[in-house]
Amino acid sequence: EAQVTQNPRYLITVTGKKLTVTCSQNMNHEYMSWYRQDPGLGLRQIYYSMNVEVTDKGDVPEGYKVSRKEKRNFPLILESPSPNQTSLYFCASSFQSGPAGPQHFGDGTRLSIL
Amino acid sequence: RKEVEQDPGPFNVPEGATVAFNCTYSNSASQSFFWYRQDCRKEPKLLMSVYSSGNEDGRFTAQLNRASQYISLLIRDSKLSDSATYLCVVNTGRDDKIIFGKGTRLHILP
Image (cartoon, rainbow over the protein chains, first blue to last red):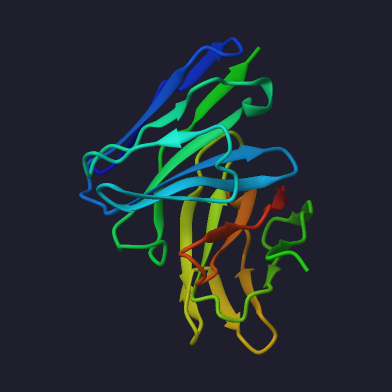
């Protein structure tokens, strides 16, 4: 089944404790992206990747890191999480080499930083 | 002017009615447009792409007006299952940035 898989689905952690949210897609998509969704602010892009070893900042990259060592994986890293990073996070991928194509989303990761 | 703007609603519409939403965008160079549907606490799912010539998929019709810089979504014969938040998505054509509108909430009433 074609899908985007995020893990964990839910995480409660404390300020400053490094964490990684994994994202994997099995559709051989070139484009992958991370978003956060907050009430009243909608979905905002954190980072995106056009292909392996190519990553770019989205609108809200501060406090996040990403890597794209393999085509299928695009982990989101919070080196020193803070409470303002409490949010619902989505990973997405797209077949076309760019966001011009429709995106497939993972189920989301609900992150709470205490 | 915000890059992508939608009326947040909520739109409370009786079952069977026709409802339409608009979404305006500020960058005239924007290249791709989409409507996504998002159910509460779920991931967004593509509803339809929006083409210059307009496109229709069953009860749903999407249109693009480049001159006035907006896209629209029309839902005919609305069903209870159409209740959701509808997100307008624009590829701004600038640095491959993709912008989501904040969404329009639709409630279909029995």
